[in-house]
Image (cartoon, rainbow, N blue to C red; front, side):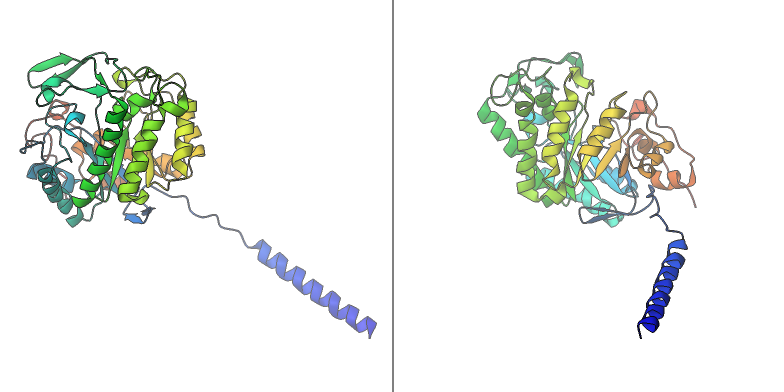
Length: 389
C-alpha cells in the first residue's frame, strides 16, 4: 500500500512539474506600449487619441462684452480631431484680462456664446476644456474698464511691454491683492468654472503657468508677501491650492486640470526653489483626483519634469521643451516611453487643423503664418485646409 501510494504521488508530482514547465515555456507577452493614437480614459471621459491641442491666445473675441464669435466656433470645430482641445486663455473676471480681444466666462452673454463653440466641437465628436486664465499683473489699465488696474500678489511690475489697441505699454506696478480680494478671486475662478460647465465644456484647465496670476503667487520674484500667502513654499503654494480646491468643489475633480510651467522664465518669473515648490504642490494635488496635470516644460528642465512625473500618480499631459523649434511630430515618442500620458501641440495645430491625421501618416505639415496669429479675421485662422482624401 505504501509503495503504491509513493508511485502515485511521484507520478502526480511529475505531472504537475511537467505541466508547470510547459506553461512556463510559453512566452509571456508584455502589454503593448501605448501610442499617441490610442484612446484614453481621462477621468471617465473617453478621448479618441492622446494628442492634445494646447491653449493658444488668438485675440479674436470680437463679440459684445468679450464674447466668442461664430468664427471661433469654426476654428475649434476644425480641430476637433484632437483627443482633447484646451481653449485659449479665458478670463474668469473682468480684471483678469491681460490682452486685447480675449474672451471671458463671467457673464451670461459669454456663456451663451461659448455654448455655440462647445456645440460645434461636440457635433464633430471632439472634447474641449476651457482654460481659465487670470493674467494678474500682466496687462494694463488701457485694457480694463473704469478705474480697474492689474493686480498681483505684490507691488512688483513685470519687465517689458504689453500690446494694447493704443500701442505697446509698459507693464504697470500692480495693485497688491488684500486677503479679502484674494478670497474673492478664488471665488471668481469657481464661478467661472461653473459657467464653463453651463456653457457645455467637458471641463476646465486652470492656468498656473507662464507668469500669470497663479504662477505669480508661486514665484518668489513676483510674490514678496510676508503674510500667509507668501514667503516659504507652503505659503506660496496656498493660492494655487485654494483655487484648485474651490473649483473641484464647484464642478468635481474629474472636470479639473491645471497647467504648470516650473522654472519658465516668461513674464519676469524667477524660481530658484522650483523643485521644492512644485513637488510640494503636486503632492497636494495627488490626493484630489484631478483630471490631469499639464506641464509646459521650460528649457533645460527635463529632469524636473521627470521628478514631477514620478511624484504625481495621475494623468500627465506634457507640452515638451523643443526650443527653438515648435513641438514636432517626433514628440509622439514621449507617450511611448512613458514620460507623459498625453502630449500637447501648440503651433503645429495653427496651420494643421487635422494634426492627428497628419501625425499618424507622417505629414505633410503646413507652416503657419505667424504674422496672423493674433487678431485679424479668418486669414491665418480658419483658412488652413485639411488634407484631401
